[in-house]
Image (cartoon, rainbow, N blue to C red; front, side, top):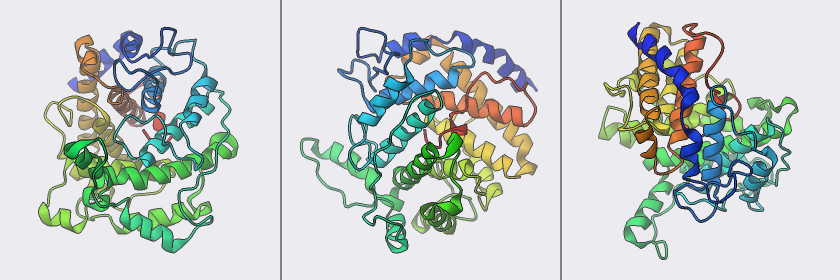
Length: 381
């Protein structure tokens, strides 16, 4: 297969990707930023922030099998900085320069903590007080799930009309499921990773041991559209019978949790067929690689591993097309410069790790991996 030959030719070049040179553009200190994670989301940031720090952590660890992380990295100092972004309720409400809601930022912070604990950092967690009831309340949880973070649009002081609308769009619940899934998926990812950080061996919890998780998967399964295999509310289905990139992008934040805890999706064939139709001829899903590529490659891999086997040849081609396209993009120095914020490249690299893990599962590649699959330890990116 020509695609497989192209992939095998490109993968060894990951060892020469100028990650440190690219990362240095986001450094906010004159000293080595890898010591304590002194990175900002944007070039020229005056100070470090949560997303810049965790973005570089994901880039470094994903490429570590091919390109070792700088030896100056101190996992404890990185972890301490992430912990300082959590407020007294355990939510990441500090140092978030993005439009992402605190639920997304919190899950991102805990993903960083899971990865750093696995590399020797000590993590002492604050309480997590997200729900008003101190113990699980079925009625409160169901009402929260049904709202999925829905709030009335409002004016944000000093932001102007356009930016206020953009921020409000993050809180439209099921009416705008892609960002709405940041709320539901983010909270549940946080619950999972907090349990994982406190269990022996850093293993994920059993669904039956955590009532919030049992309720989440039960409620989530009820809302799946059987025809597309995705979470498409009735008004989305009325507007169009075809799924969109946003439908898959939103589903990803749930599917990472399903996969991490070994929960089977009830319609793997349907979601696989739906997602395969959305890949562009160049192998990507948007004009340049980023988090959306990971959303799709994880879905492809998860559905295939669930037993959607009559589509495996199609999945092989889709994964290789994406892997080759992402590799060609990130291996070009000029293209790396095009990542003006730190948050897109981690998704592209994590997508490569999904492709690599899938090819080894299919026994199309040797067992030694050129990338590290972050989703094998954490459940949020």
